[in-house]
Image (cartoon, rainbow, N blue to C red; front, top):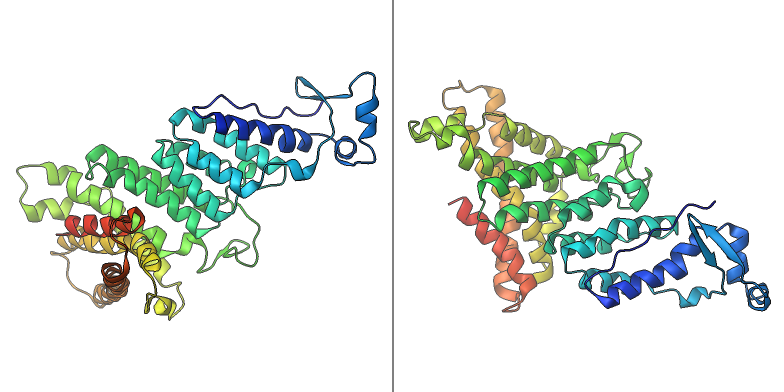
Length: 374
C-alpha cells in the first residue's frame, strides 16, 4: 500500500482551502503513485483506458481508495502565485497547522520553496503568531526542504525571534523567550548540514567557510544583543537594590553568555575576507539601506551593550597585551559596523518614501536600538 497523502484542516479562508485541495488532488496525490500509474493518468495515449472502463480504476493511497482520472500537468496550480496567495491569506493562527504537512508534501512531489519564499513564510508565520511553525519546519528540514544553508532564511528566523522582544519593549519574559529561540536556531545550525556541500553552500564537508551562516557576524550579533539586554536589564545583580551600579554591572553576566557570544562574534569576524565591507561603502537605494539596518543594527547594538556589561567586570582586572589587543579588535569591528549603520541611516533620511511601512521598519529597528543604548 502506498503511503497516505496529507489531509488539510479547514482554514479561515475559502481560497486557502481551495488552493490546498488543488495541490492535494493534482500534485500531491500523483506524487504518491507508482511511476506506471502516473503515466496512466498523465500520458494522453493511455488516458482513454481511464475513460472507457466500465468500472473506474482506483489506487490505494494509505487508507484511501482514489479513483484515477486523466490529469494535465499544465492544470496544476502555479507554484509561485499559489504559495504567495497562501502566505498572504493565512492570517489566523490555526490556519498554520497545515503548513508543515504542505511543505512535506511539496518535498515528496520534488518541489521546494525558494529562499525568498521561505523568508516570506517566516515573516507571515510570525505575524500570525505562529513562529513555532516556521521553526518546526526548519527542525524537520529533511521532510520539509526548509534548509538553513541560506543566510537570508536564518536571519529571518532570528529577526522575527528578536522582534518578539522588541514589540514588548524588551519585557523580561519576552526577552528571555527571544534569546532562547535564537539559541535554538543557532543550535540547529550546528547540527548536520541540511543541504549538500558544494558551490554556494558555504560548506566543504565539515569545514565552515566565511559564507556559512554559522560563520556570519550578522548571526552572532543577534545572540550577543539579546544576551546583553537580558544581562543588563534582568540579571539578579541588576535587580538587587543593595548593589551599586558598578557592582550590578560587574555581576550582570553571571551565566557568562555575554562573554561567550562576544567571543563568538570576534571569532567569526576573523573568518571574513579582508575587504568584506567594501560593498557597504556605497548605499545606492533606500531598499538597500533598509536591509542594511535590519541586518547590522542588532550587531551594532550587541557590541555596544556587551561593552557596558563586560567592561565593568574588567575594571579590577590587570591590563595585558592580550586584553589590549582584544579591545583594539573590538573597536575596529564596532567602527566598521557603525559606519554601515550611519551610511544607511543617511540614505534612508534622504530617499525613503514617507509613510512606507517597509521603510519604517529599518528606521524603527535603529531608533529602538539607539534608545536601548542611550
